[in-house]
Length: 436
Image (cartoon, rainbow, N blue to C red; front, side):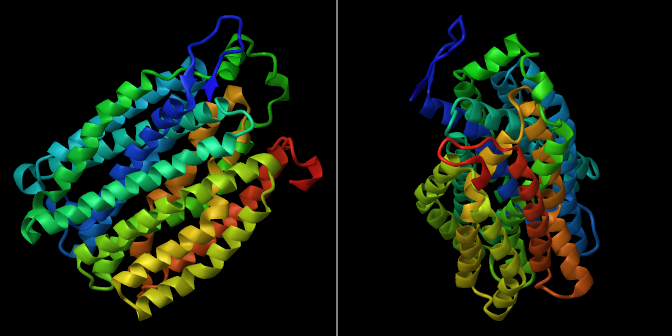
């Protein structure tokens, strides 16, 4: 489906396929780098971070992982404002350029043995640059997808989640392949550099794709007449709080998968190769159910009913602690595959329409900054520090099942946020206003 401009001066048209691919590739690069960081956490700890024991080094590694998320709100404010004023596509090109620079820094950074404390500081700098860039990436790219797809907002935006699954599969496959191809010593000392280099090389491809994108006609029209709807706009601050809460369980669940290889190695004493093999299979199966994900998102577009999302959150809340109990009783690659798959399936009614739902919480004129800041805060609070919190919880409580409690808390927050978000949704074409 081609999108034509409805404004007096016609904007160039782009195909729906090019629009979705160009918009979602930045999200895929983001997720690839974060998954790789999580998969190689123990090796990054050895190469770059000081500490007298493995737990201290791992906490520093995950702490750096989490600190980068604190740069997201800063990037969200600056780049989100840029997206609302200068355009979605301009912001997307800038964001992916900064992401590529950060990935290159991690790839080339000398080890702590070579340059001392400059090594962990360099990794921290790279993560802060990446966090800043990612602060504006999600909001601008999601806004572009939504604004090019009136009546199909959730269906279009659900490709963001699909791109994460593709990126997760690529990251897991790269890590798994390196674990098979390299000796244990080589894998631990420089395998992560190959993995990050692959992500770095994908950056220029994303930039070229995004140079072919154009802003949606609705956004262009709003830029020309900014005062037309300003008086009717709901509170942006309230929308930001709602969006941050809406992503709580989704991001906790996502980064739990990133944390699982480390959990398997430190708590279940499983080899990295076996754990990564289970995660590769998980992503393959997850991609196989993408058509179901798109179908659920399309159903939401026609009804705007959130009941299934809430039921899904309740199911994830109830399953969190028992899942880790089962993993402790059955510490195997099979369990490491089946348990995240179970969460993926029961989480589909929530995850499939989530991104589009969040976008519709905000009016066009504030969608860039609203989505960017809300998503950045939610990811920072509930995702970026999740591996750190899970590691800390286990260390403090001595209970390897305690990460399940974190999932329960995130679910409650999301259920509350969805309740507030419903009041901001316009009625769907096929549903009366009272049946949302």
